[in-house]
Image (cartoon, rainbow, N blue to C red; front, side, top):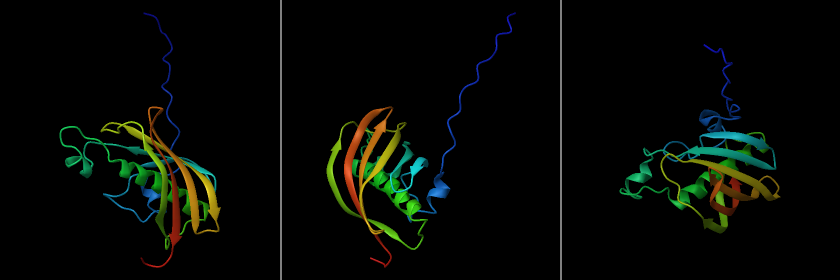
Length: 161
């Protein structure tokens, strides 16, 4: 019998933030937290997050029972949540602040996102005015294929809406 050396399977790098760490930066909670991990982050520049899409997501009961497809607006929300983590992380974490959508530009949906997919959410800061107003360019991909893209704007507030 040949004693061939077993080739070890490479392991992915550990996340920079898991879902519990993400909750230290965002006010979102289940069932409206759409980011499972942050795997890359450069303060004031860019972040990459992951969303594991499962059949157990509550929105699949109605969208659509016979052919489940993740709603495009929730893909945008997932991108916005990665952007929110990036902004709050860049500012040193601000638990008393809330990120709000201020605008969405040129949103395009290129491919359906279905149960079993892993969304890779890449956000880049394109403009910033102080600590309150942020603009981002976002791309969501599945297995390297573009699923959605958009420009997002956010305002960070401290007072209740």
